[in-house]
Image (cartoon, rainbow, N blue to C red; front, side, top):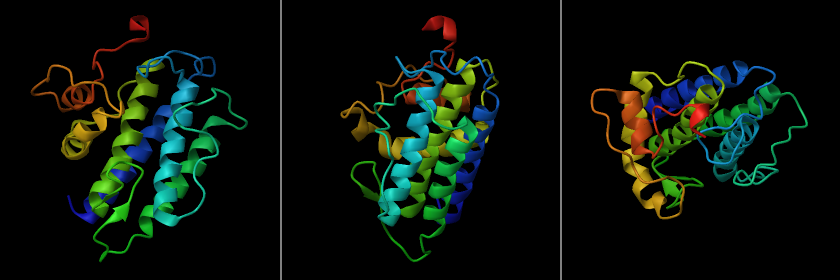
Length: 198
């Protein structure tokens, strides 16, 4: 994956997350999600916090104001504005990475990787949480086969060591021929998850 490809994937993942948040009905923010014991609001807080964490590692600026792994479930501002601030910060940080840079710091162990892989890891986080929000609120999946294929390549490069930290559940049975389901299963998410399953 080239640097430019990594940025394109990140842009697509950010857009998927925006669209998922925009599609949440007003009464659905407390619904359960595929992220066990987290509501839609908490997944949004986690996803936004992760984007800020990536930006913080790249720029040295302060990290998220709230622990993304212990989201409160309470927002002080409108959800889209909350998300947009995080996405803008992430996009600006990645745009500042020079073409000659060989490694960038990331919050994902081993805490440094090639820029394209780092941007891909950031995109993977945004896109999968976009799916979490969308399926929890009755929206169509924001993951396209093309984006899922790109992200599966990223996931295969970074996920296995992270399972030991509890960042990803064990992979489920693969779903050959369906790029979206294959990505989700690889990450330990049930592609057929519905709110009724929680």
